[in-house]
Length: 312
Image 1 (cartoon, rainbow, N blue to C red):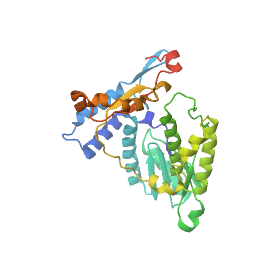
Image 2: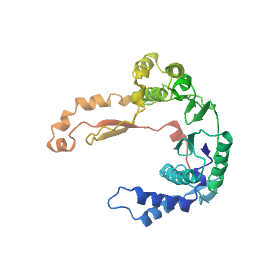
Image 3: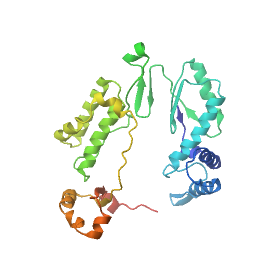
Image 4: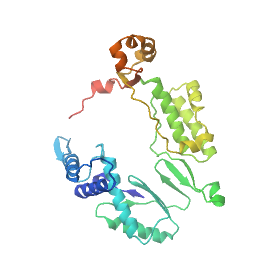
């Protein structure tokens, strides 16, 4: 099930009330932010959102803009309230109900007409929140996966997943010749490989997806040696560990050295480490900069930045 145009269909006052109620129930601030302050801040974000289109100025008075930093949390809290009430009041309930923002995955052990009745009830439950639904007895698309009844379903009643690509996907990865740090290119290869590992529960599907991924990387100019070396770090045997929530390692504060990237600075880290003794030999600087900084690259100016002009 999908929520139709969720962000633009959330009533602002109702959404603000739901967020304030959720904060009062779940907050961990000490002391807590007074609800009337939170309500005022939410109102500033939602009700003062103006934009220009074709030379005409508009003020958004319903819903929230997708570009605001609070949009996802705002929509999630609103939908959490709606779905909780919907599932509580409905006599027809799914065995499984999982939602990611405006996409819902559910499993049912009732007749199809009962599912149709539930969807009909869901579409009359709230005046602005409407659902569309896709129903199947064999497979269903959810986010970037296809959930399907594979070989394991008959014997173990276990559903499998495989990677889903939209029909409009063109696989226009960042070209290898693009002016990006080498670590970003390698990180993309490994990150996408891990995504394929997570979204394919069958070894055969995973190997097929990886084979196609390699071909697409080569088509975008990536060297075979880099591809093979990076992909050896991702194996199907380690799939279960990638599905677990990773705990972040706690480290001390590390000072970042931020600079725009271009090929001429690729040896910056090596030079910094070689000359770090200059900092360590200064009594004051030694106490401020106790460890070498990490090199953090930001995007430099592109032709688009130079030639394009965004109207503010």
